[in-house]
Length: 233
Image: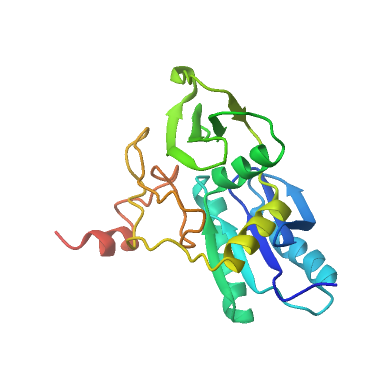
């Protein structure tokens, strides 16, 4: 029986598009689709599967992974979550996708002490953040070249978000009255590679993407859009 405390989780921060449902402390249904550049093509199909499972009932809130991750992938998931939240008239909260992975690591009792979560950032780089044994984020997220990383704690690499667990965790936080951490409008994204973006350590964030660096594709300075953004000379 689905209750009003149900949360829908969406993540498009990596090569897998995923959605999951969960209640406080109870991970439930989850669906996944491989394809790092096909988030926009597959997310609607996953939503149809979720709707079938919901059987006409509606989640109380939506949690969306805000990365760090690829520029276009994050935009697909976050825009989809915000649009769905407006249609359902429910709250939408962001979760650092590395935090969601850390929650799973702690639930499985993989490491007794501090550890690092690292995911593929392309360009021969990784996104990473450091956590304590309770999954509290201690450092990061940051982006760094693969060949210069030398962590003094175990590293969990290339693991995907479990959306059902993410939904259950967020449901618990919301049931406890936790609200998204108040932040400035910008995360200061698009900074230099290896820069540290200041992100609150709290588990619930605003639903805005953590890019950490500039996109791979930029608008030519000759286009009308670029000229409008930069002003006339």
